[in-house]
Length: 518
Image 1: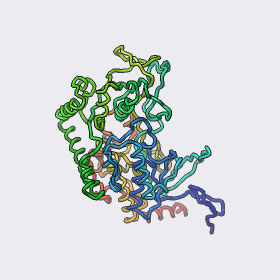
Image 2: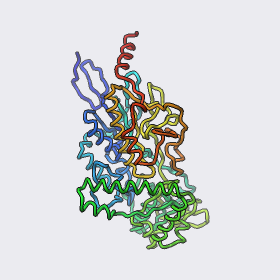
Image 3: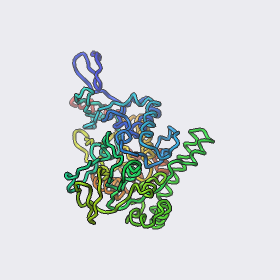
Image 4: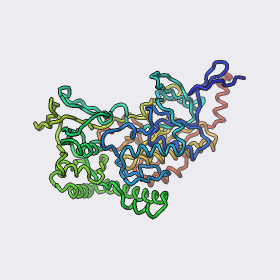
């Protein structure tokens, strides 16, 4: 009988020189806000399971560690973007990036999750074996000395918490004449550490969440900042600090205050979303009136902040304490609605013929979507096309046993659904143990009408929607944008009716027949 004599990360080596992959109960891909939250749930709800987090970068935090542009912040309140089991204690309801990153890392340390993360470990392939009911995960490790090695890990359950953005590359349209520009072109996703914009003329191309964050932040020290947009985006002014939260935390224990404020914000956000979808004309009038009150310039609101589409056809942009409008009112920033004709040596010329002088141009033109962090999953060596599959409860995918993916809400804080999904994964894992299943996979009981997974008209979604699994038209196959309904159905739904399981005993008999040739 052989015995292990040396442990190499990812492998166990025996005296005979044979190596077997390291095996884990659950592998989480991604150590950002979602991945850390998932590991916390697994540690508390499935404490007997071995868990590891594979992180391609060399630091924890995901989005909040990668993005370093000026003013980076959440566009959701931290009482819902934060974890329900870790109360947000800071003063600001809309928090800046460094504060969110610190919150994630403190949570990881408190729950011991920081010890589960394997950095510089990128998942490059994942194959599920129906014979063993295990995932074989191929990883590429980038060593501190610059070396690169490949290894494999096996696991019973694979949970992708990479989000749906491509962190290696953003949407980067080609602008005519950009090579002639004598200034500096900057992409927010890869912000230079030493960029000094003080006293300089800046043009920010874009009108989304990144652009409306950058403009007031850079306007504080730049000579002037111009936000150049092709078309307007709906803007919502929100308080940077929640006065009700301050009062609740002064009167109640931290956990109780957090639950109260979180519930209030969830219900308000859901009610406003339903109002926008059901009464779009009234929603347009309300937002226009509020923005005119904040900016005190009806003509500017009409020209630059009144989109042709209805509120929540695309995601709203939140501006805490009306900071963008305040920058416009001081004259340190301005907004122009036009199209880029060409870059010139000294700036950007528009289709209208006007030229915007610039020393720095920031291309806040949006992100690209990437399903499963770029992993192309396969079963028994055959690739499973995600676009041909349907997602169950916004988490598990037909054709892919023992796999879940974390997809947040588009109309509310990402973490609301992310945490529900992690709790669902824990339910599924316990369900498998309780019924002796080696694997489970969702299967509809009858044909489904299929719809896009992400049901927004935003350009970044439309450009990549065909690479994602679909959602169905009913029940657990429909990806609703309603946390209240999801919380009830996700945590109480009948898993036995919705998941098809393969018993371990049946798997063992099949394996025995395979190895004996009978």
